[in-house]
Length: 301
Image (cartoon, rainbow, N blue to C red; front, side):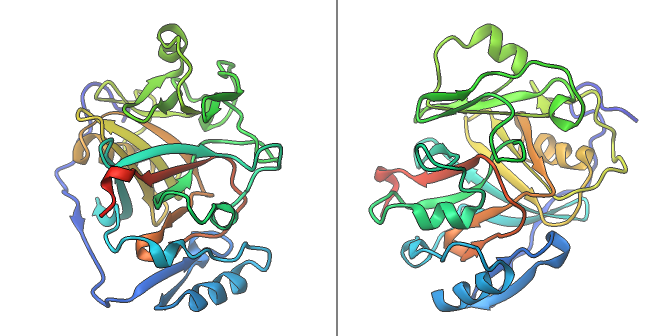
């Protein structure tokens, strides 16, 4: 069955939050994919460093951001149609969004741990961060990419294989005050000013409140996936699956539960999350562009 119209294959199953009640921080060290993750209860930075060293001998040392982060996380676990997800909310009045590929004139970070270790001590607090778009073997973006107002890769409107070219694909972009998602063709036709940040990926999951017409209800392709959606209030929702999930189910979560007007798939299999407030830093396969959500100055306690 193919999705057509407004949330065409909507299910009645509702999501429910399931939180652990240990009171301990949990650190996730990803080893050779999500199925090989090690979940460690940790109460100190030393435990996190030990976990990182075990899973990836080349991983950057864990920074002190975990210790100075606020206790309230912007992310929470939910379950949707029997699939465990982590959903993180960014609010324009509380957060700023930026992209990070690598140090200026340097090679890409390739991991959240390396990026975290490179952040200056006086940098704004990180609410959360995750991988942010598709990339080549060197970690360079394969589509439109703007970081700090500088375009590093032009819009890719070419046909081709793979998820990126399952048209329509799209662009997640914005400034300090406003974030948007548009199909690549819409972006090409209607966006003249260069945004502060922008990353192109594909496919779109939700387009103007409707599910992508080429995505099956619950297809056989199952992977760890992450994506971003925008709702009518302008809030950005970042979601990562904690077990393999189909495109159809993943798209329905954005449409049915988050009421996203538009949502864009970011990547699969390599998906990773950094949530300092919960002491979570995923390691694993090399990454490309990173999306970083920082607490704005006025939102700090």
